[in-house]
Length: 207
Image 1 (cartoon, rainbow, N blue to C red):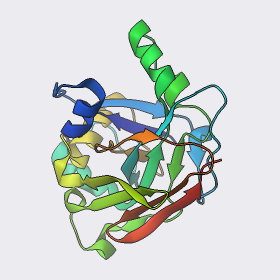
Image 2: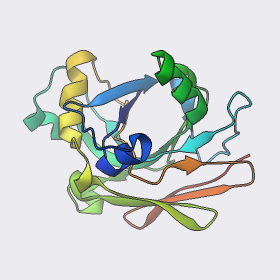
Image 3: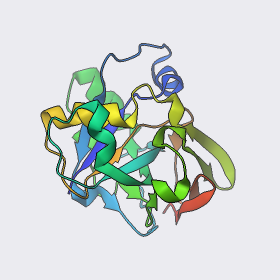
Image 4: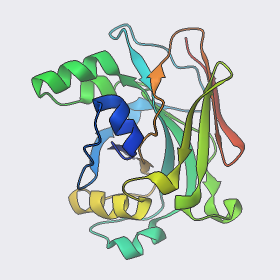
């Protein structure tokens, strides 16, 4: 399986990173290896190579069929369950990569940089279209991020269609759909929790 992550998919997040609203004209994506997975609400250990690791809370879609070059209008057939994830980012290393025009793997694809909820919820159970879902994240009991999928620049079906033009999606692949405004640092001793439509899916320590 692979992890596909969408960057810059909420306008206010773009503004908090760049100080402007330069909206992309097509989805931006990158990948993480399966060794990036952090499962079962296991603790996240801040790596020693970064002094500024940030959380990015995201709606995660699980692909349930083999997909290649699918039209957007059929993309809804490719998923039935959603969960939550944290795209941990070594922000200091990311800035360095961007300044030097280097790839992002060192700041995005390190071990355990992709926390995923132990449970994925069927859309049929949630009773909503994927673009109507809401989620939130708290750090140490304080609200840090609120996500509303209706505010995505590119909806889930567009993302799947776009990514599948360039790489085949397989059963079990995970699509991180982008983070809303409110990203920030974590440090040892923090505790992170996140809810999808009122269901707590993430609940783990930072060490």
